[in-house]
Image (cartoon, rainbow, N blue to C red):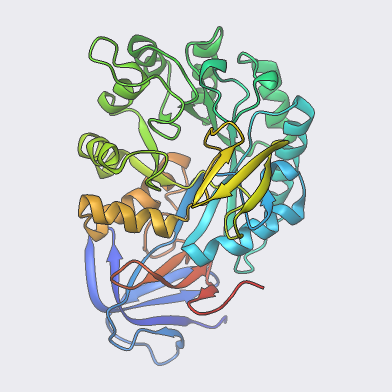
Length: 394
């Protein structure tokens, strides 16, 4: 019989409340038992020793391009391995590897590589790649942002089907502009296939958003950024996102992409049930300031900002730990609300809540231990300690 491990004497944030001085027992990478009585046969993995430490479900980042010098568009297993290795230091235990608008061949290589990696990845303590977020090329040229204009195309079902086949069915979320020709039928197809259609990089009107929702749109990519804004005579994508409960909304809470009072306003409307924190991070995350590549474009990283030469924001170097800290400071989150926007909502949106997104018996032991200031003390990925505070990246 395999060994039972314990995380003992910590506050537990469970689906139905919190438990003080609780213990979580882990066996074969799964949560085997939760309680307040220590079991003699368990080997202690982490001892909270009565300190003010709280155990949360591991964070899930549904929108991340890269980290520590690597990018999904590199199209190599080594790049995805490195991303998976470094993400636990910020509390992230699973993620969607996110592509960007590029040549068809480059996207094909990236999704094929991503699909292989999802199929081969072992529970070795790295963050688990749950699938692929296809961001572009089916987007608006008017709201391209850092996505290269020359590779943007209207939605093409046959092209997507080719990429989905190449990925082994692992494309889980697609960002597109619903106002483009053929987009509504494409949204319906995605929804019917169990792929999350997300409105993003879009110049749609409010009515076009409403129509997209009627056809199955379920998600909004980085709310406020590269989309038609809220105007009192045309509410645009922002207004549509705020008023449709059918839409889950991502937000990049780095204080750069979105004014923090705009974040606060959106959260007041959408609430913890319909908000997901993301990083939209690129390869410069974890690295010093300098010039880095994003889809063949130079990105200048300085003062915590990642921008193209013309000043356009080009992703972020944000961590989910930082996003959670900032969100807590502006919205006074409860611990359960924090769980929702960092883990639970993402798991539900991706259809993996049966094994991710909460601390419950039978689920993967994806866990993050944090202090009261939401600093990561330790991260566990599928039952393996992936990070401890004070350990440096090699």
